[in-house]
Image 1 (cartoon, rainbow, N blue to C red):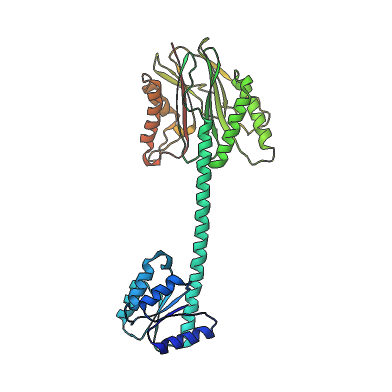
Image 2 (cartoon, rainbow, N blue to C red):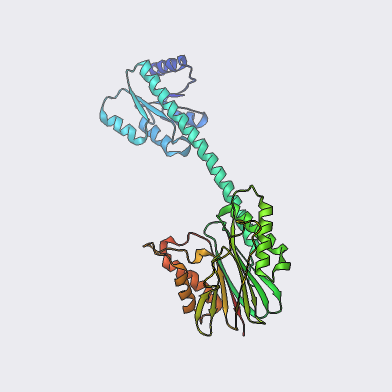
Length: 386
């Protein structure tokens, strides 16, 4: 505890009172000496006289408050001045309390202990804030690593598969998203498009996404049949998580496009249906248009997934996407929705495939304004070449 006073009698009195109460004291005889003593020692509280040579108490208080290390140091000004103006000036430079000479020991110690309690709370809060900041930095590092790993699991560029042109756009809503996609080469002029949406975001979603990626790689022998692939993926997914695990589910759509025989085969596990765009007529429709999707992966153990088949022709485009593309709302609360998304796709029927994908995201952004984006956005477009 630092006593700052240029009058020996005052110093002696304060020193005696504090030591009788069990406190250790440090003495400074003027303002400059006080600043040096604070810099050289661990001080819990400062008892500061106002009228001193070199630097007065106001100047000392202002300098202590201007430095980060001492900005919260408790300061009690001890003064013989009785005027209100002097107390106002002291408060303006940062004093915590005042004691007017002559003072009573009981009053002095009550004010000292009160400020020490405040300092203890501040110290504990600062320690908690530091701990929280350290944890946040660690979390940021982990999220950055998870994002790096997640990005590595996604195709970095559209694959070159004879008979097809591909384009994609992936925008995670947070540092680590929960969407996934892949494009599979299945044979001569045959391709598979897989798009999935993991429930939630963050590190957990990234881990589940990695499981989906692994399962998709292990099930390449079933990749010709969307229904068989989703059925086996659902079984393996439940095995990995265990029967007693918290409910975690993944919506997914898998589309097999055969440019040779002109067909599109779709399996759907709780996912938004893909869109088939016929560039020849400019018509865009959901596929299938009237059927409910099968349950999401992870919901129903042992579920047998079905599949839907429809004809396709050269220049047709299949768009698979997650619900973040159309489940957006404008400032008035109106949802974009699948109907308007279909209109947007039809309007862009003549656009080059990469431009079509980029424009869909941009139109959703313009529709939602400041409310864009609350969920991951993931689009994969496949065009059958003539």
